[in-house]
Image (tube, rainbow, N blue to C red; front, side, top):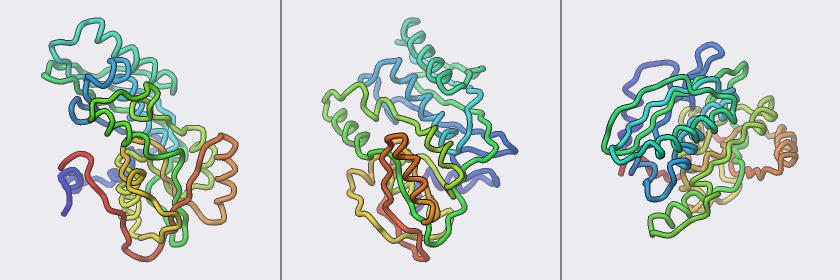
Length: 274
């Protein structure tokens, strides 16, 4: 059964829907929400951490598509208990994070609300965007980095435990240099926001292929959402070149599946609706 998120998307009729960002010419448009009690709880994070992560997860869409972020529009729902000092911490962290990636906040909107909710639009540029479509039978699928930390630490937070302030859950690491350098060898790519299992299924669905597993994935890795590592697909003969780039950057790269003419899928749990 299709979940509500995918049902809503399926009701929209545009050729630009389907990637991390909509590509129109050499300009890319993307937007993600970061809502209190959906994506985070305020008792878990400082206002600076909330602002930084909200910006990073939005920049990730541009980075994942080999695009350079240019501008951001930010909408914030402000609860009445936020002080001016809180608002300063929130906005300064968003601005500082955006500037790190060459992006400028140029406007947006503010409204009063019961919870702290943020929605950010990123406008970016790319001459060679990395799309989700283009997989071929026999291609390899791989992911960057080490997965599982975000789910592990989220579970700890739900148990009322403290986690490291440098945790992936607080501080995703974007792979801009890896994507830029490896782009000539990549057929497809996307960031891992809903977990490796679900995002691999999305990639396979849009390309109408299945897979043969090459490396067993456990559920602690497969179901770990909000990692913001990269899921990539490429020709077998380009594996060595891509591994060499990853090694130069001291970036782990795990090749876990081969694209096949079947309907194989991973188990997938929606991260947005139960």
